[in-house]
Image 1 (tube, rainbow, N blue to C red):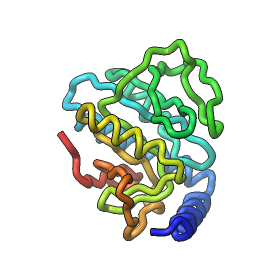
Image 2: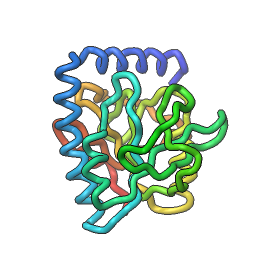
Image 3: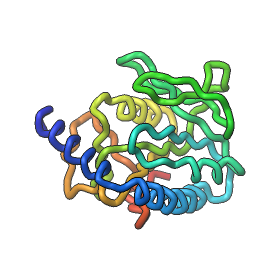
Image 4: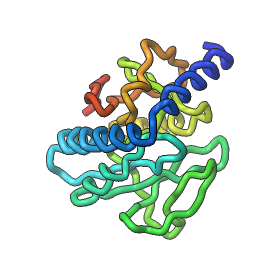
Length: 195
């Protein structure tokens, strides 16, 4: 797939997400959070795990409610954006922690917080398909990070998205990392959970 066609897909996907009214965005985010919490509780099989989420920017699906529930049993972390060409790292996050503004305007834990290697990674996205292909913003941080983590340990990657973000097919490049599942306000799409 050319950069031009991926760029067009990204624009189309961004418009679909942007088309949600603020009321629908909040309502659908809350529904997705309930499903996301249930999904992760099922995957964790009642044992504590390290869960890396994200701080939503712009009109991304906000997962704060799910993280608040998950914090009761699991260790939470948020990503820290590195310089270009490096992979994401993750720092421990407690609800109410002060966050700093990192690259791309993303809120990140402060440098003093403990580094965490997640067992489950919740990813934002622009679009997804039912094969687990994800369309991100084109920077490649999550693909590179997932490739590195998967070489080191078993990790489950779950996309969090509105159902409207689904596409029939997203052509994957050789470096693209598939999701193990996608959770929307309507369903948990299991695309190949690795255990």
